[in-house]
Amino acid sequence: MIRALKEIYTKWRTRCPFVRRFEEWRVRRMVRKFELKRK
Image (cartoon, rainbow, N blue to C red):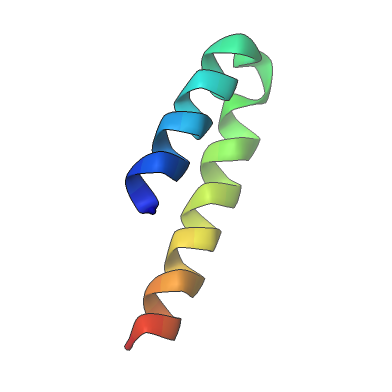
């Protein structure tokens, strides 16, 4: 699941490089929440 999300994210990021910084921050928050839920 996470691998698929990363693939979609990288494809989208390469298409829109100007939002890269914001997306990286958002993805980091998402991953952090997901990891907390798993624990």
